[in-house]
Amino acid sequence: MVGAGLLVYVLSQTDLELLWLKLIESGWGIFFVLIIYCASFSIDTVAWQLTLPSTTFNFHWLYHLWKVRAVGAAFGKMLPFSAFGGAPIKSFILKRHYKIGYREGVASIILVESTHLISMIFFMASGVLLILLDSNLPQSYSTFSALSLGALAVGIFGFYMVQRLKITSIAGGWISQRSLGRRLEKFLTHIHEFDERLVQFYTTKRSDFYGALVLNLLNWYMGAFEVYVILYFLGHPVSYMEAIMLETLVELVRAGTFFIPATLGTQEAAFLLATGAITGQPGLGVATALMRRVREIVWLVLGFAIGWQYSAKPSELVQEAQKEMDNDSI
Image 1 (cartoon, rainbow, N blue to C red):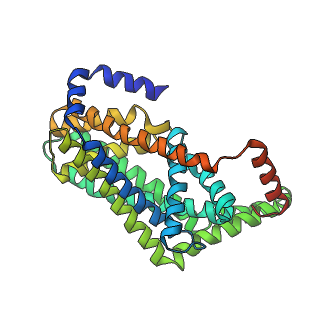
Image 2: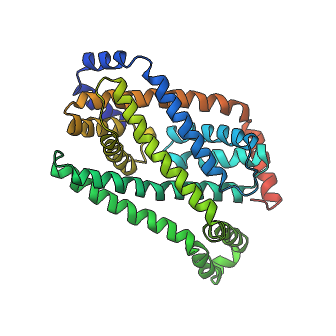
Image 3: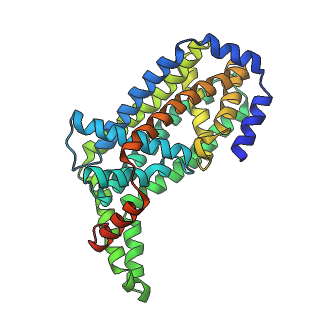
């Protein structure tokens, strides 16, 4: 509701007639945006497969994982907490249709999100550096970007260290010594095995870890390229450096409002302010945000359409869950 209200406010502060003309002028630009995002999405899929040791690196698996990611991304956009909102969906599909166990599936999702977040810090660091060096931007933008990057870096580093140092297992070991812990012995064993998978990826599969990092970093820069292409077709080209600054500012806002489904309203507001500061035309930012929304809507429709083939009746899901619990395989 807050996001929807913010979106209405942003549109009320925009010349809608001029906005419509800008979108019409973009012509076939949206198709180039879709091509760029499709390439970016495919790179993300390759990064994800690096975290799934039971799969074989070939077109067959990439195609299936691409479909699973599309379904998960569609649900993730519609649910709170961004990418993690679609994580249970992806884990379920991997288990039910591709025989990849929940431990491996969930571990891979956490690992790829970790590399995604770590690479985001590197990307944002380059963007914040450009913002700090740009004398045309207000000082408030430099302060906001530097403080936000610092807070994100601390949080993401903490998230990584919890996995790397097996903090969950350590806490589980402490709990297991209590009376309650003995009742949860089986659950704590699963937690320990899960942590081992994470640490193994970071320590013994470093080539996959670094490969996923590089691919995710490339993806962030492709996001900036998407902004560059959108503004080109809107008739106001910017330099690629300016596109990086724009994408950094928008992503800093998106990261802080991840709990709003599809970051509704906040993305438009971020584009309005950031594009206005860099180009002097705030309305251009709303047009950019709306073109990105069109791309997101196309991907939502595609994701839910693909998800239809994976759908199951609620009774079937309950029966499968009970079977998994009986077999002690979750």
